Image 1: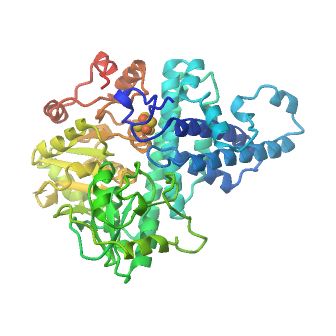
Image 2: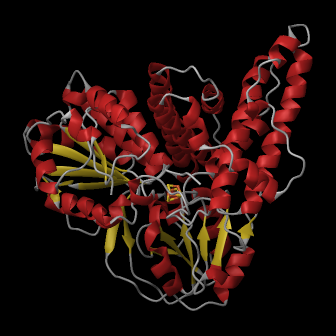
Image 3: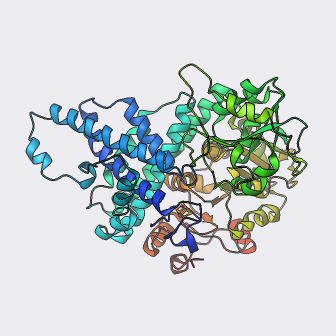
Length: 572
Ligand code: SF4
């Protein structure tokens, strides 16, 4: 086992025996084989596309399979066996179709030099066969044939592509598809089969993935607004009510709407957990009286919070952890999420709502949630609201009443060093505006940030996918302030990374040319010292320091990091 694709890799190096996330060696091997199989499928899909042989089904399959490998999404060996089998069958079909179309060309020459990913076949659809094969490939194997810096950036690209896959699936859930996104995903997978890629080429592919990641987030935001209305600043209660409830986590707003529609007037309340809190801000969802509150904090608190909820929990898109016995029988997955023996709610049939009757029946036989906390928070500063505030914010910046905007976005996690983000947000002076997206906000969103001249000091725009709302606002602000470049804005970025979608946040900032981005609480373990030096030179990428030092630097002019300091970022 060799996995270092999230922020919780052991000692910020690698999970080599079992994953901190709960990923066992067999799942790691199966995921490696799935990635291997998808590269082989992409090898033919790129070629088949030239002959118009590619169907939307293959595009969607590749996106879903990539999403299944995002950290904390799926831990079910049976699901990965099915996905690998489907990838190979799709690859073989495309290969046949392509070779038929290619007959007039030099087929023998083409077949003479194929990568293993394009040729591997199995004898049986069997978990052991697949696991054994998976153990012979993967990250370490790839590193044997590549320059270590090229390999590091290629791994980064593959993680970005997993993030792109998840965004494509989120878009699909609200009937919004982009072939450009699908095509790039396959180009990127196919690109990694080439053993002669240069560092410049791999960096360019990473930047392109950042560009397309941002575009996918923007498309998703537009589709969500079209489907559920423009989010509005909304007070979300954190207390509990007397009815039994269903707790829903993840990003899928369509699932939440289907659940609300089916629970309305049943006496079952719906609570959000983690990033699902953003649902409270959408007019088409907040109109349901039984969407009552948010329960608990970010994803990593689930083992202590889910048992106290008493009712069933629905995990829609990600962030599942090994269930404890205290709530195992009340956990349900759907979409690409999977855990062995956790009941899975099947996909919706065309033109129908997803059938949540099983989970509703479970709720009807459950007690009401045990109170966790009280109070309220405000979420839902979407594009429309920010546009309405644009001139006011612009005027306050010109009048020096707002000195800086600090973006603290990304995902929460277990590392104790993440206290940095709480201390940072709460230490910022009264003339600093804070913008956030993702669930890192659970570390500080209950703090009273007050206002600056009637402008809220704290803007929660929504999920990690809504990061594009912040970027769109900053682009409008640049133009409103008459600044020549985005880097002339008084803005600093703090990206709390955890998994592959937060990698896309970082790459999208690189693609836009933003500088002075802090990534923490640790820098990605897959970056080599040379890559960190390269990123420091090109984008002034930094790790985090003490809150005091970082605030000082952010407010008084950023200083380029000493390259040797960044390159020797200590591993925990
Ligand atoms: S996803 Fe993260 S925690 Fe899980 S095995 Fe990989 S590096 Fe470790």
